[in-house]
Length: 433
Image (cartoon, rainbow, N blue to C red; front, side, top):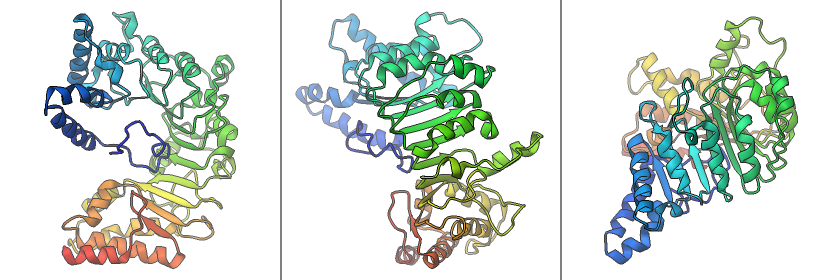
């Protein structure tokens, strides 16, 4: 884990690997051990015990809320003043109660980073018993955190996102560098109508924007003023890549982008377009909308393009780009495991990985990506499969083939940390296997 949990300078790039819950628990175990040395140490370490709170199930949120309420009732100094980073990432059946999260936010006025990844148990079909826990009020309380630099929000309301988020963003815009917005519903309002009624938000220092939204909300965000925007990660929740909102957004902000991640795999987009006639009349000109793009991130599960069996694009929306220098690939570990399961073979036979070898090799075509210099495996699990204690021989054969083809094109192959993968590394691991 990063020694400073509030330093988000590295986390602004989607190429960086975020902190994982195991790393958080390891760091917390060290802090807890130190806090047990003496009463003086315990008092001193309170700030560091509470500075970064990761909630992974509802009971943890309830325990923290009870602690903060008890301290208030007993007139003690609130530990909530130490909370600078609040991260909520829970399983679906362990989402946090809204009143617990509201209590935590009420007693944590100095938040720098707030992340809610679909982890609050909100209902859209009944009135809220406590008006303080409505989606609008839950968002508005964050406006008191004037130093907020990183914000990840989920919309649990049926109302379009910007309707209650815009006031929050206007009050925190001065320091906000990273913004992630996702929605659990698709508004039924027309994009043109809603965009004309929505206030324009100015985010002067925002550098990274991650969106899991619908076509209507994309149209609204096209009007926002984001002069420093460089990195965008996009998943269209309604597959509206051919819709006007998607086009408005990239027409407005595409020229500023240096890094782009498309979250939907090519196979999902293709299946959606094939199932809903009529199909788009023309290819989406993403390369034209983003002419200055340097880095692109995609998924490893792109399927073979039946229209051109000699060429597999990294994503159906970006088959080529003349200025692209780096392509990052997620979920290679999942693709390797799925291919090995789908095509059973001897553990030393790398034949099941032939489609993936050809897919990655297709990135090396000069005509498609003439400026390409780096291919990065963004999977931490794939790194373990390749460099663990006993890696499978067919995994090493797979990477040896990729390395040879990258060498022919003079392209560097990197692991998730950005460190070069070399043939010497594979040979050394192979000898130890």
